[in-house]
Image (cartoon, rainbow, N blue to C red; front, side):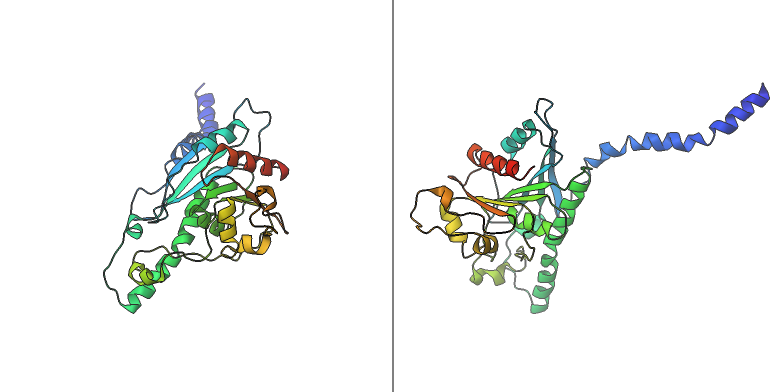
Length: 285
């Protein structure tokens, strides 16, 4: 009997690390939901809400939807939330994820302190990398979801800057831009020197739209962006009659993967959601 006990201990002893490893693996998913920095002076994820597909949905899509907001840029704050859209798409069978990426509090506050040329250049160098840091934070949050396919990203207004910057470095199945903004920094040139010490540097984009992109905005905004936004300028068609009330004929697909739709409101409403959902269905999402 002592011999049998000795052999049993000898056999079971190597299994101890396995038991500990399995126990640790159950801890990891719990910790993943609290990975963001709480330091207000750092770029960080300040919100990540995951809605699983409804069991009552007729089918479950393998493509998750990320509802993105970029927070903390003074003068361009997006107050609207994606709660209604996120909940409705989850009911339709999509994994819906609301993610907010926030700039440091120090970069959203104004400053009138004079700085030297070298200081300005250093600040510009640092601020130029802010969008890259935001991309990495967003990439980390998406990677932690452990999803099989790259997500569709839905953004609105100022957040379309982060969405477009993200796809230049990271994979994405589709991009939906609601009320995109001009490619050029719309802030006044006369105030830029004063704002240099605290302002977000406007990114520029070089990506080729060889993947599904849907742009949705009002007639007025689209007409204004037809000379100020690269995607609308290069891939949208102006109507023959700008005064036409037939909104469906204002902009149409010109080439590649871009489609432009016309909405009746600048708000996040159910009409816009239905238009987005129809486009997603035509793209096979």
